[in-house]
Image (cartoon, rainbow, N blue to C red; front, top):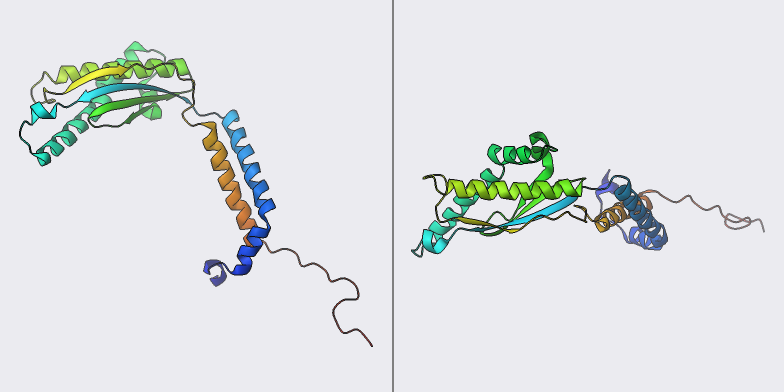
Length: 218
């Protein structure tokens, strides 16, 4: 087993570089297989909507205390994340779109990015682009409604928080994972496999031509 963990020798590297045609073909085959997987089982479409979240730090913390501002942002951001995935928001989506269930929404359709001050990105993945856009719009609307309602309740959210829907979801034309990613992954995987074949599969020894080598009679 020591040979398996030993560093590559110069001969190993030479063998690998000499077989560049072999692993180049392997990379090409991998890219073609990746493209085939993309078209046979394509990834879902991804709809995108944006909500602007403004914590109004200057009003919430007028004193210059960076540490308190940091904890304020972290605490309120976590509250907003909980609201975005709360039962109330999920039920609102289901009530306004009968073509989706709460189990589907909680099963990996909804993605939230950039949970801090600024633009919050709401993503919805679905095989139907129209349904993805509809759910993304309903999600952001329910989120904005719930946040605005809870800023008026003492102890729920800081009253200085403001949320505004800045980008409505449109029916997506792109998949959640681009074709180029499938091509790259397929090529890299088969390139690595081809390299392993070159390094670990020894070539068959070539027979010596007749009359060469050995002790020829004089």
